[in-house]
Image 1 (tube, helix red, strand yellow):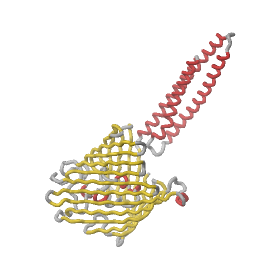
Image 2 (cartoon, helix red, strand yellow):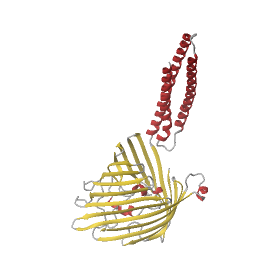
Image 3 (cartoon, one colour):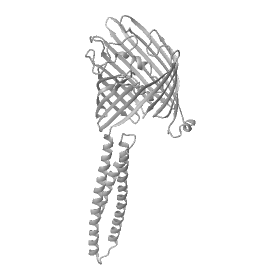
Image 4 (cartoon, helix red, strand yellow):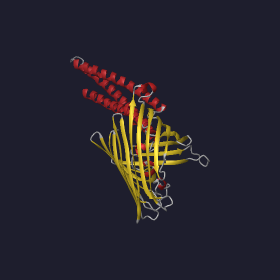
Amino acid sequence: MKRASWLGSAILWIFLTAAFGRAEQTPSDTKSPEVSQQKQEKIAALETELDRLRAEMAGLQKELERLRSQAAKADDQGMAARIAVLEATQVKIETELARIAEELRLIGDALDQVSENDRKRPTMTVYGTLQATKYNQRDSILDAEAFELVLSGRPHPRLSFFAEIEFERAASVGGPRGGEIVIEQAYASYTFAQLFSIRSGVLLVPFGNVNVDHFAPLRDVVRKPLVSFAIAPSDWTDNGVQISGRRLLGTTWLLEYEAAVIAGLDSHITSVGAREARQAFGVDNNGNKATVGRFAIKRGGSFETGLSGYTGNYDDLNRWRLKGWAADLRAEVGPLRLTGEFDHFTADRGVLASGQLTGYYVRASYDIRGGFLKKLAKDFDDPRLTFVAQFDWATIEGPTVSDSLFEKNRETGVTLGFAYRPSRQWVLKVNYETNTATNQTLDRGTLKGWLASIGFVF
């Protein structure tokens, strides 16, 4: 009898542990920023039921202890009758335990279903920027540079999708106001293991510091670095297939790799850069596919360094090869953050002189937290004021746009400014730029002036 009662208690505790374990994991498993009201109400009802079953379980345990105590004190007189009563009571309690265990199993299944439905539900994020510029001898401009929709989902733990749709400069399809609507990324992923997953669709090309400088509201300066504009033509997206993976070394270091087969850049690589060499989606000027990849090592969120490589034929006749490499770094030491990237491409031209595209940037950011910022943004958890300085440099040797001359162009820039973030969702940036160009303009030319922007990520 005692064995039967303990067995019943053990069954109950097993189901309690399983059900409560699932219930505690449900909120952290969801990818949504906010749990739906319907889910909150359902979880609240299930938790109320679990509390009721807890109380009932405690009462049943007390009853079992009382029965065991009575059995231990029983003497020979009337023992048979008392044992019969205890056995009948034991059967009743075990039946009740089985009922409670079944209820707990059903509740656990219901909680799992709530979590599964929430996990499968697609999520949407929006981000965008408004820029204001006033360069010397030019009119001031307000520019709603971009508004972007980011859709993502994970219908299965090993299947996911991601899409980033950009509405650039208040785009109007078929209207006179200009702008464009662009699919910057749109791919599906299948994860075989942590060390190997495959992704296909419209890809953000894994070359250089794309994760740091692609999303404008997260960047500490208003404009993307010169090297990311003229040398590695960000936003650099292409159709292709990509493999990736990661491996944890010890408890703090993480190795990551990304490698892709893409259509690649075409023959419009000139003395002003590779920006016009990005091909339209679904087009390949020579049928030759390029390969590109990046290998990185990280330590938490405070250190990351990567090495990238690119190779592929780029001319229409499929004779000449474009080869490139990049090294990037991001490091944090207390409030100081250092970010940089160096890119170099060589465009073979047969018996003619090869084109050379080289550039780099170095950025230093210093964060101030707490103090008056807490008072200024009292409703936010971690307001931050960042002072930033950046140096840009790029030089390009190659044919002119008409391909009649071979020339060398250079551009440099210095940026000073600050970025105020009451939270990661909103930022105000103010910069002063000094840019100098030798020969042809690569991006900004010889200009001085002020830039400001407001960015958001929700």
